[in-house]
Image 1 (cartoon, one colour):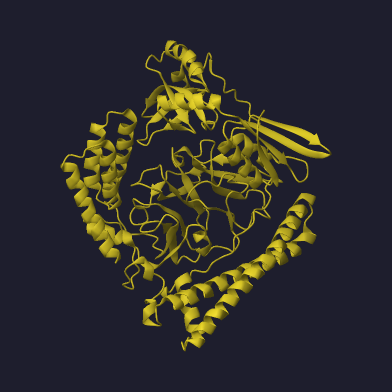
Image 2: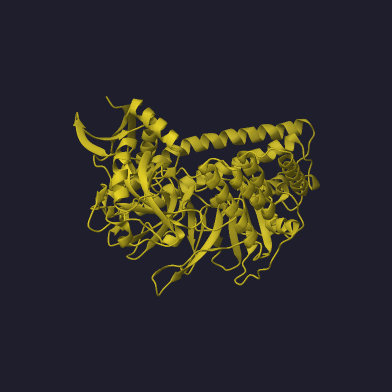
Length: 626
Protein backbone atom coordinates (compact mmCIF):
# COMPACT_ATOMS: atom_id res chain seq x y z
CA UNK A 1 0.00 0.00 0.00
CA UNK A 2 2.81 2.41 0.97
CA UNK A 3 4.63 1.66 -2.31
CA UNK A 4 1.41 2.26 -4.23
CA UNK A 5 1.03 5.68 -2.56
CA UNK A 6 4.54 6.65 -3.61
CA UNK A 7 3.89 5.54 -7.19
CA UNK A 8 0.66 7.51 -7.26
CA UNK A 9 2.40 10.60 -5.90
CA UNK A 10 5.13 10.33 -8.52
CA UNK A 11 2.51 10.00 -11.24
CA UNK A 12 0.84 13.13 -9.90
CA UNK A 13 4.16 14.97 -10.04
CA UNK A 14 4.63 14.00 -13.68
CA UNK A 15 1.14 15.31 -14.41
CA UNK A 16 1.95 18.57 -12.58
CA UNK A 17 5.06 19.08 -14.71
CA UNK A 18 3.00 18.43 -17.84
CA UNK A 19 0.45 21.03 -16.70
CA UNK A 20 3.19 23.58 -16.26
CA UNK A 21 4.52 22.87 -19.72
CA UNK A 22 1.00 23.40 -21.00
CA UNK A 23 1.11 27.01 -19.84
CA UNK A 24 0.35 27.36 -16.11
CA UNK A 25 3.46 29.28 -15.08
CA UNK A 26 2.32 31.42 -12.12
CA UNK A 27 5.03 31.77 -9.48
CA UNK A 28 2.80 30.24 -6.82
CA UNK A 29 1.95 27.24 -8.99
CA UNK A 30 5.56 26.77 -10.04
CA UNK A 31 6.70 26.79 -6.42
CA UNK A 32 3.97 24.36 -5.33
CA UNK A 33 4.94 21.84 -7.99
CA UNK A 34 8.64 22.23 -7.23
CA UNK A 35 7.89 21.69 -3.53
CA UNK A 36 6.11 18.44 -4.35
CA UNK A 37 9.02 17.25 -6.47
CA UNK A 38 11.49 18.09 -3.72
CA UNK A 39 9.46 16.09 -1.18
CA UNK A 40 9.75 13.11 -3.55
CA UNK A 41 13.57 13.50 -3.63
CA UNK A 42 13.47 14.71 -7.26
CA UNK A 43 15.85 17.54 -6.46
CA UNK A 44 17.12 18.14 -10.02
CA UNK A 45 13.57 18.58 -11.36
CA UNK A 46 12.60 20.75 -8.41
CA UNK A 47 15.67 22.99 -8.85
CA UNK A 48 14.83 23.60 -12.50
CA UNK A 49 11.29 24.74 -11.64
CA UNK A 50 12.46 26.91 -8.72
CA UNK A 51 14.82 28.66 -11.14
CA UNK A 52 11.93 29.29 -13.50
CA UNK A 53 9.85 30.64 -10.61
CA UNK A 54 12.68 32.97 -9.61
CA UNK A 55 13.10 34.32 -13.13
CA UNK A 56 9.32 34.72 -13.56
CA UNK A 57 8.68 36.50 -10.25
CA UNK A 58 7.82 40.17 -10.55
CA UNK A 59 7.54 40.68 -6.81
CA UNK A 60 10.84 40.82 -4.90
CA UNK A 61 9.54 38.77 -1.97
CA UNK A 62 8.33 36.01 -4.29
CA UNK A 63 11.74 36.00 -5.94
CA UNK A 64 13.52 35.72 -2.60
CA UNK A 65 11.18 32.87 -1.55
CA UNK A 66 11.83 30.98 -4.79
CA UNK A 67 15.59 31.40 -4.43
CA UNK A 68 15.47 30.13 -0.84
CA UNK A 69 13.58 27.03 -2.00
CA UNK A 70 16.09 26.61 -4.84
CA UNK A 71 18.85 26.48 -2.24
CA UNK A 72 17.03 23.60 -0.50
CA UNK A 73 16.84 21.64 -3.75
CA UNK A 74 20.51 22.27 -4.48
CA UNK A 75 21.37 21.14 -0.96
CA UNK A 76 19.37 17.97 -1.61
CA UNK A 77 21.41 17.30 -4.74
CA UNK A 78 24.64 17.68 -2.74
CA UNK A 79 23.37 15.48 0.08
CA UNK A 80 22.78 12.55 -2.31
CA UNK A 81 26.56 12.29 -2.46
CA UNK A 82 26.88 11.07 1.15
CA UNK A 83 24.06 8.66 1.99
CA UNK A 84 24.34 6.03 4.74
CA UNK A 85 22.33 2.80 5.02
CA UNK A 86 21.72 2.04 8.71
CA UNK A 87 20.05 -1.17 9.84
CA UNK A 88 16.49 -0.46 10.97
CA UNK A 89 15.44 -2.28 14.12
CA UNK A 90 11.93 -0.87 14.63
CA UNK A 91 9.57 1.88 13.58
CA UNK A 92 6.33 2.90 15.22
CA UNK A 93 3.87 5.74 14.82
CA UNK A 94 2.94 7.83 17.85
CA UNK A 95 0.94 10.96 18.61
CA UNK A 96 2.94 14.16 18.32
CA UNK A 97 1.63 15.07 21.77
CA UNK A 98 3.69 12.52 23.70
CA UNK A 99 6.00 10.61 21.30
CA UNK A 100 9.07 11.70 23.31
CA UNK A 101 7.85 9.67 26.31
CA UNK A 102 8.59 6.46 24.37
CA UNK A 103 12.32 7.19 24.19
CA UNK A 104 14.47 5.02 26.49
CA UNK A 105 15.51 7.95 28.69
CA UNK A 106 15.18 8.28 32.44
CA UNK A 107 11.65 8.43 33.80
CA UNK A 108 10.07 11.85 34.45
CA UNK A 109 12.83 13.61 32.51
CA UNK A 110 10.46 15.40 30.10
CA UNK A 111 8.48 18.48 31.13
CA UNK A 112 5.70 19.58 28.80
CA UNK A 113 5.59 23.13 27.45
CA UNK A 114 4.84 25.85 28.30
CA UNK A 115 7.13 25.75 31.33
CA UNK A 116 9.60 27.99 33.11
CA UNK A 117 12.23 27.61 30.38
CA UNK A 118 9.93 27.70 27.34
CA UNK A 119 7.19 30.05 28.51
CA UNK A 120 5.45 30.19 25.12
CA UNK A 121 5.34 26.53 24.12
CA UNK A 122 4.06 27.48 20.68
CA UNK A 123 6.32 25.43 18.36
CA UNK A 124 4.43 22.69 16.49
CA UNK A 125 7.09 20.01 17.06
CA UNK A 126 8.80 21.07 20.29
CA UNK A 127 6.29 19.72 22.81
CA UNK A 128 8.52 19.24 25.88
CA UNK A 129 11.80 20.25 27.49
CA UNK A 130 14.32 17.57 28.44
CA UNK A 131 15.53 18.04 32.01
CA UNK A 132 18.04 15.50 33.35
CA UNK A 133 17.60 14.34 36.92
CA UNK A 134 20.37 16.61 38.19
CA UNK A 135 18.16 19.72 37.91
CA UNK A 136 16.33 19.21 41.19
CA UNK A 137 19.65 18.68 43.04
CA UNK A 138 22.07 20.58 40.84
CA UNK A 139 25.74 21.01 41.66
CA UNK A 140 27.93 23.94 40.67
CA UNK A 141 28.84 23.62 37.00
CA UNK A 142 25.80 21.60 35.96
CA UNK A 143 24.42 22.79 32.63
CA UNK A 144 21.08 22.57 30.88
CA UNK A 145 20.68 22.95 27.12
CA UNK A 146 17.18 23.67 25.91
CA UNK A 147 15.20 25.27 23.11
CA UNK A 148 12.97 28.31 23.59
CA UNK A 149 11.62 31.18 21.46
CA UNK A 150 13.19 34.61 21.37
CA UNK A 151 11.05 37.75 21.20
CA UNK A 152 10.52 37.26 17.45
CA UNK A 153 9.17 33.74 18.02
CA UNK A 154 12.14 31.90 16.48
CA UNK A 155 13.33 28.90 18.50
CA UNK A 156 16.95 29.11 19.68
CA UNK A 157 19.16 26.80 21.74
CA UNK A 158 20.08 28.26 25.13
CA UNK A 159 22.40 27.15 27.92
CA UNK A 160 22.13 27.90 31.62
CA UNK A 161 24.69 26.86 34.26
CA UNK A 162 24.16 26.33 37.97
CA UNK A 163 26.26 28.67 40.11
CA UNK A 164 25.92 28.41 43.88
CA UNK A 165 22.18 28.91 44.47
CA UNK A 166 21.24 30.45 41.10
CA UNK A 167 21.12 29.44 37.45
CA UNK A 168 23.01 31.74 35.11
CA UNK A 169 21.15 34.00 32.74
CA UNK A 170 20.33 31.80 29.70
CA UNK A 171 22.71 32.46 26.80
CA UNK A 172 22.68 31.47 23.14
CA UNK A 173 25.22 29.01 21.82
CA UNK A 174 27.65 29.77 19.01
CA UNK A 175 26.66 31.78 15.96
CA UNK A 176 27.07 28.74 13.70
CA UNK A 177 24.25 26.98 15.59
CA UNK A 178 21.83 29.90 15.34
CA UNK A 179 19.92 30.37 12.09
CA UNK A 180 17.13 32.72 11.04
CA UNK A 181 14.64 29.87 11.63
CA UNK A 182 14.18 27.35 14.45
CA UNK A 183 16.54 25.08 16.38
CA UNK A 184 14.87 22.47 18.61
CA UNK A 185 15.53 19.40 20.79
CA UNK A 186 19.21 19.74 21.80
CA UNK A 187 20.39 16.39 23.22
CA UNK A 188 23.84 15.61 24.60
CA UNK A 189 25.73 12.36 24.17
CA UNK A 190 26.37 10.34 27.34
CA UNK A 191 29.91 11.78 27.62
CA UNK A 192 28.66 15.35 27.05
CA UNK A 193 31.06 15.96 24.15
CA UNK A 194 28.58 15.72 21.26
CA UNK A 195 25.28 17.54 20.83
CA UNK A 196 22.51 16.54 18.44
CA UNK A 197 19.78 19.01 17.51
CA UNK A 198 17.39 19.87 14.70
CA UNK A 199 17.17 23.03 12.65
CA UNK A 200 14.89 24.33 9.92
CA UNK A 201 17.30 27.11 8.94
CA UNK A 202 20.76 25.55 8.57
CA UNK A 203 22.09 23.68 5.51
CA UNK A 204 19.50 21.06 4.57
CA UNK A 205 16.93 19.80 2.07
CA UNK A 206 13.89 21.32 3.78
CA UNK A 207 11.90 21.04 7.00
CA UNK A 208 13.83 20.19 10.14
CA UNK A 209 17.09 18.32 9.56
CA UNK A 210 19.26 16.62 12.19
CA UNK A 211 22.73 17.99 13.02
CA UNK A 212 25.60 17.11 15.29
CA UNK A 213 28.25 19.34 16.79
CA UNK A 214 31.27 18.45 18.94
CA UNK A 215 32.68 20.34 21.89
CA UNK A 216 35.97 22.05 21.10
CA UNK A 217 38.06 21.97 24.28
CA UNK A 218 40.66 24.35 22.87
CA UNK A 219 38.15 27.01 21.81
CA UNK A 220 35.73 26.24 24.72
CA UNK A 221 32.73 26.27 22.41
CA UNK A 222 30.65 24.02 20.19
CA UNK A 223 32.03 23.39 16.71
CA UNK A 224 30.46 23.86 13.30
CA UNK A 225 27.26 21.76 13.08
CA UNK A 226 27.19 18.95 10.50
CA UNK A 227 24.03 17.63 8.84
CA UNK A 228 23.75 13.87 9.47
CA UNK A 229 22.55 13.50 5.88
CA UNK A 230 20.14 11.01 4.33
CA UNK A 231 18.33 8.98 5.65
CA UNK A 232 18.47 10.64 9.11
CA UNK A 233 17.57 13.96 7.51
CA UNK A 234 15.05 14.29 4.67
CA UNK A 235 12.89 16.91 2.94
CA UNK A 236 10.40 16.30 5.77
CA UNK A 237 10.73 17.17 9.47
CA UNK A 238 13.28 15.09 11.39
CA UNK A 239 14.14 15.73 15.02
CA UNK A 240 14.97 14.50 18.54
CA UNK A 241 17.96 12.29 17.77
CA UNK A 242 19.63 10.35 20.59
CA UNK A 243 22.08 7.47 20.91
CA UNK A 244 21.15 5.13 23.75
CA UNK A 245 23.66 5.02 26.64
CA UNK A 246 24.24 1.28 26.11
CA UNK A 247 25.64 2.01 22.64
CA UNK A 248 23.14 -0.23 20.84
CA UNK A 249 20.70 2.11 19.13
CA UNK A 250 20.21 5.47 17.46
CA UNK A 251 16.68 6.85 17.76
CA UNK A 252 14.97 9.79 16.09
CA UNK A 253 11.51 10.99 15.05
CA UNK A 254 10.18 12.08 11.66
CA UNK A 255 6.85 13.02 10.11
CA UNK A 256 7.70 11.47 6.73
CA UNK A 257 4.59 9.54 5.69
CA UNK A 258 2.61 10.78 8.73
CA UNK A 259 -0.38 12.99 9.35
CA UNK A 260 0.08 16.44 10.90
CA UNK A 261 -0.63 15.19 14.43
CA UNK A 262 1.61 12.11 14.40
CA UNK A 263 5.26 11.12 13.97
CA UNK A 264 7.20 7.91 13.51
CA UNK A 265 9.95 7.00 15.93
CA UNK A 266 12.76 5.07 14.22
CA UNK A 267 15.13 2.75 16.06
CA UNK A 268 18.38 2.01 14.18
CA UNK A 269 21.43 -0.02 15.07
CA UNK A 270 24.09 2.39 16.29
CA UNK A 271 26.89 2.76 13.77
CA UNK A 272 29.86 4.77 15.08
CA UNK A 273 31.51 4.95 11.62
CA UNK A 274 28.78 4.84 8.96
CA UNK A 275 29.83 4.10 5.40
CA UNK A 276 28.48 6.84 3.14
CA UNK A 277 27.98 6.45 -0.57
CA UNK A 278 26.61 8.36 -3.51
CA UNK A 279 22.98 7.52 -4.37
CA UNK A 280 21.70 9.32 -7.47
CA UNK A 281 18.97 6.80 -8.32
CA UNK A 282 15.75 8.37 -7.04
CA UNK A 283 13.77 5.15 -6.31
CA UNK A 284 16.78 3.75 -4.43
CA UNK A 285 17.14 6.98 -2.42
CA UNK A 286 13.44 6.92 -1.54
CA UNK A 287 13.71 3.28 -0.49
CA UNK A 288 16.63 4.03 1.82
CA UNK A 289 14.91 7.06 3.35
CA UNK A 290 11.69 5.08 3.93
CA UNK A 291 13.63 3.22 6.65
CA UNK A 292 11.53 0.05 6.51
CA UNK A 293 12.51 -2.47 9.20
CA UNK A 294 14.49 -5.44 7.87
CA UNK A 295 11.67 -7.92 8.57
CA UNK A 296 10.16 -7.14 5.17
CA UNK A 297 7.12 -5.26 6.43
CA UNK A 298 5.67 -2.62 4.14
CA UNK A 299 3.42 0.18 5.26
CA UNK A 300 3.24 2.13 8.48
CA UNK A 301 0.07 0.47 9.73
CA UNK A 302 1.83 -2.86 10.28
CA UNK A 303 5.03 -1.49 11.77
CA UNK A 304 5.59 -2.67 15.31
CA UNK A 305 2.97 -5.40 15.19
CA UNK A 306 5.00 -8.26 13.72
CA UNK A 307 2.12 -9.64 11.66
CA UNK A 308 -1.25 -8.22 10.77
CA UNK A 309 -3.98 -8.61 13.37
CA UNK A 310 -6.03 -10.74 11.00
CA UNK A 311 -3.38 -13.51 11.14
CA UNK A 312 -4.16 -14.22 14.78
CA UNK A 313 -7.79 -13.21 15.38
CA UNK A 314 -10.81 -11.83 13.50
CA UNK A 315 -10.19 -8.24 12.46
CA UNK A 316 -13.65 -6.72 12.84
CA UNK A 317 -15.20 -3.65 14.44
CA UNK A 318 -16.05 -5.40 17.74
CA UNK A 319 -12.56 -6.85 18.22
CA UNK A 320 -11.03 -3.51 17.35
CA UNK A 321 -13.36 -1.78 19.86
CA UNK A 322 -12.37 -4.29 22.53
CA UNK A 323 -8.64 -3.77 21.89
CA UNK A 324 -9.03 0.01 22.06
CA UNK A 325 -10.87 -0.30 25.38
CA UNK A 326 -8.11 -2.57 26.74
CA UNK A 327 -5.59 0.14 25.82
CA UNK A 328 -7.76 2.78 27.47
CA UNK A 329 -7.97 0.77 30.71
CA UNK A 330 -4.21 0.35 30.71
CA UNK A 331 -3.71 4.08 30.08
CA UNK A 332 -5.86 5.14 33.05
CA UNK A 333 -4.35 2.46 35.28
CA UNK A 334 -0.81 3.61 34.40
CA UNK A 335 -1.76 7.27 34.89
CA UNK A 336 -3.27 6.53 38.29
CA UNK A 337 -0.17 4.58 39.31
CA UNK A 338 2.09 7.39 38.10
CA UNK A 339 0.07 9.99 40.03
CA UNK A 340 0.20 7.98 43.28
CA UNK A 341 3.93 7.31 42.78
CA UNK A 342 4.57 11.02 42.29
CA UNK A 343 2.73 11.84 45.54
CA UNK A 344 4.74 9.24 47.46
CA UNK A 345 8.00 10.55 46.00
CA UNK A 346 7.15 14.15 46.93
CA UNK A 347 6.07 13.21 50.45
CA UNK A 348 9.39 11.45 51.00
CA UNK A 349 11.28 14.52 49.75
CA UNK A 350 9.29 17.02 51.85
CA UNK A 351 11.00 16.50 55.27
CA UNK A 352 14.46 17.08 53.76
CA UNK A 353 13.47 20.30 51.96
CA UNK A 354 15.11 23.31 53.61
CA UNK A 355 13.68 26.32 51.78
CA UNK A 356 10.11 27.41 52.41
CA UNK A 357 9.51 28.22 48.73
CA UNK A 358 10.60 24.71 47.72
CA UNK A 359 8.35 23.19 50.39
CA UNK A 360 5.43 25.26 49.11
CA UNK A 361 6.09 24.09 45.54
CA UNK A 362 6.17 20.42 46.61
CA UNK A 363 3.03 20.81 48.73
CA UNK A 364 1.20 22.45 45.81
CA UNK A 365 2.28 19.60 43.54
CA UNK A 366 1.03 17.01 46.06
CA UNK A 367 -2.30 18.82 46.36
CA UNK A 368 -2.70 19.00 42.56
CA UNK A 369 -1.97 15.27 42.16
CA UNK A 370 -4.35 14.41 45.00
CA UNK A 371 -7.10 16.28 43.16
CA UNK A 372 -6.39 14.24 40.03
CA UNK A 373 -6.77 10.84 41.73
CA UNK A 374 -10.61 10.83 41.99
CA UNK A 375 -10.94 11.90 38.35
CA UNK A 376 -8.51 9.24 37.14
CA UNK A 377 -10.17 6.58 39.31
CA UNK A 378 -13.59 7.51 37.91
CA UNK A 379 -12.27 7.32 34.35
CA UNK A 380 -10.70 3.93 35.07
CA UNK A 381 -13.96 2.64 36.58
CA UNK A 382 -15.92 3.77 33.50
CA UNK A 383 -13.41 2.17 31.14
CA UNK A 384 -13.49 -1.09 33.15
CA UNK A 385 -17.29 -1.07 33.08
CA UNK A 386 -17.31 -0.54 29.30
CA UNK A 387 -14.80 -3.36 28.89
CA UNK A 388 -16.99 -5.74 30.89
CA UNK A 389 -20.02 -4.81 28.78
CA UNK A 390 -18.15 -5.68 25.59
CA UNK A 391 -17.07 -9.01 27.10
CA UNK A 392 -20.71 -9.74 28.02
CA UNK A 393 -21.77 -8.95 24.44
CA UNK A 394 -19.19 -11.44 23.17
CA UNK A 395 -20.45 -14.07 25.61
CA UNK A 396 -24.10 -13.49 24.64
CA UNK A 397 -23.26 -13.79 20.91
CA UNK A 398 -21.21 -16.95 21.43
CA UNK A 399 -17.90 -15.29 20.55
CA UNK A 400 -14.98 -16.94 22.33
CA UNK A 401 -12.06 -14.60 23.03
CA UNK A 402 -8.67 -15.10 24.60
CA UNK A 403 -8.07 -11.99 26.78
CA UNK A 404 -4.34 -12.75 27.05
CA UNK A 405 -3.99 -12.96 23.28
CA UNK A 406 -5.95 -9.74 22.72
CA UNK A 407 -3.91 -8.01 25.43
CA UNK A 408 -0.74 -9.15 23.65
CA UNK A 409 -2.07 -7.81 20.34
CA UNK A 410 -2.96 -4.50 21.99
CA UNK A 411 0.47 -4.27 23.55
CA UNK A 412 2.10 -5.01 20.22
CA UNK A 413 0.14 -2.25 18.53
CA UNK A 414 1.01 0.29 21.19
CA UNK A 415 4.62 -0.55 21.95
CA UNK A 416 5.84 -2.69 19.04
CA UNK A 417 6.86 -5.59 21.29
CA UNK A 418 7.37 -8.07 18.45
CA UNK A 419 10.06 -6.06 16.64
CA UNK A 420 12.81 -6.88 19.11
CA UNK A 421 12.67 -3.35 20.55
CA UNK A 422 10.03 -2.51 23.16
CA UNK A 423 8.74 1.06 23.24
CA UNK A 424 8.07 1.64 26.94
CA UNK A 425 6.11 4.76 27.82
CA UNK A 426 7.74 6.87 30.52
CA UNK A 427 6.00 9.30 32.85
CA UNK A 428 6.16 13.05 32.22
CA UNK A 429 7.99 15.07 34.84
CA UNK A 430 7.18 18.27 36.70
CA UNK A 431 9.08 21.52 36.44
CA UNK A 432 11.32 22.18 39.47
CA UNK A 433 11.54 25.82 40.44
CA UNK A 434 14.64 27.39 38.93
CA UNK A 435 15.96 30.69 40.26
CA UNK A 436 17.95 32.75 37.76
CA UNK A 437 20.38 35.62 37.96
CA UNK A 438 18.74 38.97 37.35
CA UNK A 439 19.36 40.61 33.97
CA UNK A 440 20.62 44.17 34.12
CA UNK A 441 20.24 45.85 30.75
CA UNK A 442 22.64 48.74 30.32
CA UNK A 443 22.86 48.90 26.53
CA UNK A 444 21.01 51.88 25.04
CA UNK A 445 18.99 50.84 21.99
CA UNK A 446 18.07 54.41 21.04
CA UNK A 447 19.11 55.30 17.48
CA UNK A 448 22.32 57.36 17.60
CA UNK A 449 25.29 58.42 15.46
CA UNK A 450 28.37 58.22 17.69
CA UNK A 451 32.11 58.73 17.24
CA UNK A 452 32.32 54.93 17.06
CA UNK A 453 29.48 52.69 15.92
CA UNK A 454 28.08 49.90 18.11
CA UNK A 455 26.59 46.50 17.40
CA UNK A 456 23.46 45.62 19.36
CA UNK A 457 24.19 43.42 22.37
CA UNK A 458 21.05 41.40 21.61
CA UNK A 459 19.99 40.93 17.97
CA UNK A 460 16.48 39.87 18.98
CA UNK A 461 13.81 42.30 17.78
CA UNK A 462 10.75 43.13 19.89
CA UNK A 463 7.44 41.50 18.91
CA UNK A 464 4.92 43.22 16.67
CA UNK A 465 5.55 45.77 13.92
CA UNK A 466 8.91 47.55 13.78
CA UNK A 467 10.94 49.29 11.08
CA UNK A 468 14.69 49.20 10.52
CA UNK A 469 17.07 50.77 8.03
CA UNK A 470 19.18 48.27 6.09
CA UNK A 471 22.67 49.62 5.47
CA UNK A 472 24.40 46.72 3.66
CA UNK A 473 24.82 42.95 3.36
CA UNK A 474 28.19 41.20 3.23
CA UNK A 475 29.59 37.73 2.64
CA UNK A 476 31.60 38.06 5.89
CA UNK A 477 31.11 39.75 9.25
CA UNK A 478 31.26 43.54 9.41
CA UNK A 479 33.65 45.48 11.64
CA UNK A 480 32.92 48.44 13.94
CA UNK A 481 34.84 50.71 11.55
CA UNK A 482 32.36 49.89 8.76
CA UNK A 483 29.39 51.14 10.84
CA UNK A 484 30.44 54.81 10.44
CA UNK A 485 29.18 55.64 13.95
CA UNK A 486 25.70 54.12 13.65
CA UNK A 487 24.14 52.54 16.75
CA UNK A 488 22.56 50.13 17.43
CA UNK A 489 23.35 47.96 14.39
CA UNK A 490 21.64 44.56 14.26
CA UNK A 491 23.17 41.54 12.55
CA UNK A 492 21.25 38.65 10.97
CA UNK A 493 21.93 36.02 8.33
CA UNK A 494 20.02 35.18 5.20
CA UNK A 495 19.26 31.61 4.14
CA UNK A 496 22.15 31.87 1.67
CA UNK A 497 24.56 32.66 4.52
CA UNK A 498 25.10 36.39 3.85
CA UNK A 499 25.34 38.78 6.79
CA UNK A 500 22.64 41.47 6.83
CA UNK A 501 23.08 44.68 8.84
CA UNK A 502 20.24 47.01 9.83
CA UNK A 503 20.21 49.95 12.21
CA UNK A 504 17.67 51.07 14.80
CA UNK A 505 14.26 49.98 16.05
CA UNK A 506 11.45 52.30 14.99
CA UNK A 507 7.76 51.84 15.81
CA UNK A 508 6.25 54.07 13.11
CA UNK A 509 6.93 54.73 9.45
CA UNK A 510 7.22 58.48 10.02
CA UNK A 511 9.83 57.91 12.71
CA UNK A 512 12.03 55.68 10.55
CA UNK A 513 11.56 57.95 7.54
CA UNK A 514 12.82 60.94 9.54
CA UNK A 515 16.06 59.03 10.25
CA UNK A 516 16.71 57.71 6.73
CA UNK A 517 18.51 60.80 5.47
CA UNK A 518 20.80 60.84 8.49
CA UNK A 519 21.83 57.26 7.71
CA UNK A 520 22.43 58.10 4.06
CA UNK A 521 24.53 61.13 5.04
CA UNK A 522 26.59 58.83 7.29
CA UNK A 523 27.87 57.17 4.11
CA UNK A 524 25.15 54.63 3.29
CA UNK A 525 23.60 56.15 0.16
CA UNK A 526 21.79 52.94 -0.81
CA UNK A 527 20.18 52.45 2.65
CA UNK A 528 16.48 51.66 2.63
CA UNK A 529 13.62 51.04 5.06
CA UNK A 530 12.66 47.47 5.97
CA UNK A 531 9.36 46.72 7.79
CA UNK A 532 9.27 43.62 10.03
CA UNK A 533 6.53 41.88 11.95
CA UNK A 534 7.61 39.59 14.80
CA UNK A 535 11.11 39.61 13.33
CA UNK A 536 10.08 38.65 9.77
CA UNK A 537 10.29 40.98 6.76
CA UNK A 538 6.90 42.02 5.34
CA UNK A 539 5.72 44.23 2.47
CA UNK A 540 5.60 47.96 3.07
CA UNK A 541 1.88 48.11 2.15
CA UNK A 542 1.13 45.46 4.74
CA UNK A 543 3.15 47.35 7.35
CA UNK A 544 1.33 50.63 6.75
CA UNK A 545 -2.05 48.89 6.90
CA UNK A 546 -1.03 47.16 10.13
CA UNK A 547 0.19 50.45 11.61
CA UNK A 548 -3.16 52.05 10.80
CA UNK A 549 -5.03 49.17 12.44
CA UNK A 550 -2.90 49.39 15.56
CA UNK A 551 -3.73 53.06 15.98
CA UNK A 552 -7.44 52.25 15.87
CA UNK A 553 -7.29 49.10 18.00
CA UNK A 554 -7.84 48.91 21.74
CA UNK A 555 -4.90 48.22 23.98
CA UNK A 556 -4.92 45.56 26.68
CA UNK A 557 -3.32 44.89 30.03
CA UNK A 558 -2.83 41.95 32.38
CA UNK A 559 -3.75 41.81 36.04
CA UNK A 560 -1.64 39.22 37.88
CA UNK A 561 -2.19 37.94 41.42
CA UNK A 562 0.84 35.93 42.65
CA UNK A 563 0.16 33.35 45.35
CA UNK A 564 2.77 34.79 47.71
CA UNK A 565 2.47 38.45 46.70
CA UNK A 566 5.80 38.62 44.81
CA UNK A 567 6.37 38.47 41.07
CA UNK A 568 9.13 35.96 40.14
CA UNK A 569 11.91 37.20 37.88
CA UNK A 570 11.07 34.54 35.30
CA UNK A 571 7.53 35.94 35.10
CA UNK A 572 8.88 39.48 34.61
CA UNK A 573 11.19 38.25 31.86
CA UNK A 574 8.33 36.39 30.14
CA UNK A 575 6.10 39.48 30.22
CA UNK A 576 8.86 41.67 28.80
CA UNK A 577 9.49 39.14 26.03
CA UNK A 578 5.86 39.53 24.98
CA UNK A 579 6.12 43.33 24.89
CA UNK A 580 5.07 44.54 28.36
CA UNK A 581 6.81 47.87 28.89
CA UNK A 582 5.30 48.67 32.28
CA UNK A 583 4.84 46.33 35.27
CA UNK A 584 3.33 48.08 38.30
CA UNK A 585 2.60 46.73 41.80
CA UNK A 586 -0.74 47.61 43.44
CA UNK A 587 -2.63 46.49 46.54
CA UNK A 588 -6.41 46.13 46.90
CA UNK A 589 -8.09 45.02 50.13
CA UNK A 590 -4.86 43.47 51.32
CA UNK A 591 -4.28 41.55 48.05
CA UNK A 592 -1.09 42.32 46.12
CA UNK A 593 -1.60 42.60 42.35
CA UNK A 594 0.60 43.46 39.39
CA UNK A 595 -0.58 45.30 36.27
CA UNK A 596 1.42 44.72 33.06
CA UNK A 597 1.06 46.27 29.62
CA UNK A 598 0.26 47.74 27.26
CA UNK A 599 -0.39 45.05 24.64
CA UNK A 600 -1.41 46.06 21.12
CA UNK A 601 -3.86 43.17 20.63
CA UNK A 602 -5.90 40.73 22.65
CA UNK A 603 -4.00 37.85 21.06
CA UNK A 604 -0.66 39.21 22.27
CA UNK A 605 -2.12 39.81 25.73
CA UNK A 606 -3.48 36.24 25.87
CA UNK A 607 -0.07 34.86 24.85
CA UNK A 608 1.60 36.89 27.60
CA UNK A 609 -1.01 35.63 30.08
CA UNK A 610 -0.25 32.01 29.13
CA UNK A 611 3.47 32.68 29.63
CA UNK A 612 2.81 34.23 33.07
CA UNK A 613 0.75 31.22 34.15
CA UNK A 614 3.53 28.88 32.99
CA UNK A 615 5.96 30.96 35.06
CA UNK A 616 3.97 30.19 38.22
CA UNK A 617 1.32 32.93 38.49
CA UNK A 618 -1.97 31.16 39.32
CA UNK A 619 -4.37 34.05 38.66
CA UNK A 620 -3.98 36.12 35.47
CA UNK A 621 -6.72 38.10 33.71
CA UNK A 622 -6.84 40.17 30.51
CA UNK A 623 -8.67 43.50 30.38
CA UNK A 624 -9.03 46.49 28.05
CA UNK A 625 -7.06 49.55 29.05
CA UNK A 626 -9.20 52.63 29.53
